[in-house]
Image 1 (tube, rainbow, N blue to C red):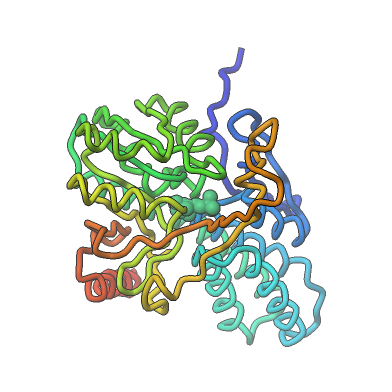
Image 2 (cartoon, protein in one colour):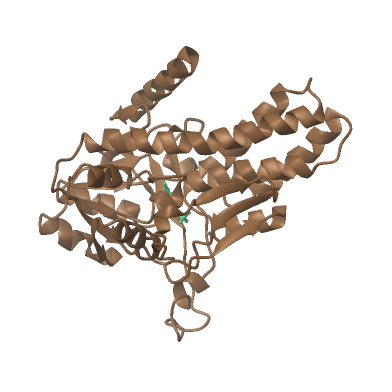
Length: 364
Ligand code: MRU
């Protein structure tokens, strides 16, 4: 009899080149149903990103890279100019799926740069180069998450209590997650962390995804409602907060799932350090401060009706449903990247991280 597959045995985002499809786990169905979607049209890919069937900044980036490669593959053009005009349109379309996670734009721009740098090649050759780049973006994400996990592990000790918000786990990346990477690596090394996962209203990424994937992997995870973080911190059960991010501005202000700034504010009160786990692909030095980050607003139904058998708010009531909030840089103890840990002042340390990245690239 074959052993039951864990959710961690599935790939969050994958390319099926033979079928010209983006293959994802439909995250809106978890944890009650594991449904694998094979998306072949640009409309399907756009919708999957918009509906959060694939979600989490790095996973959105990988999905966009594969998505734009698939768009390029279908383009019929005899000249590079004709090809590139169609490629640009497809890029703009995918870029409109969600506004906050900078990885969407980062991945599409990286694919665009490659297309532009090879304008002297045949259309068939450019398509092959785009294929390689999409695969590289996904492979790099695995390495990036592992590095973040290694750096994060240096900040905690065996037996520590860790709190996380939303899902910055394997389901949000190609593997390991960002905020969860230290948890998975610690699990392999016998650290016995005790993790608190905020349920994360309104879409419950913490309950449905983080608690699910950590529980499946055997990590000691306790689910709490979003309004319980002060209690667990006051009880002294949390030694560090690890969260992901959707966009880090040049000054360190960080957009992440709505409620992150509440956690960070509470953590400051109880002297618990808050670490942002940030691939450099999520750091946007072109965005000066958190005030410049476009925060996605989502439908009211997510708050009033979704998940309930009967609606839980009066019909027609006004609803404010921002998908992300900005944690001010003074609430952040460190920003953990694949090239090291940045500390305040972030306007300097983030530049140093990018200089390290450039140096590593040059040395390759
Ligand atoms: O709306 P979502 O579910 O895409 O929001 C995701 C988050 O806020 C994550 O914390 C963030 O993207 C980091 S994922 C490594």
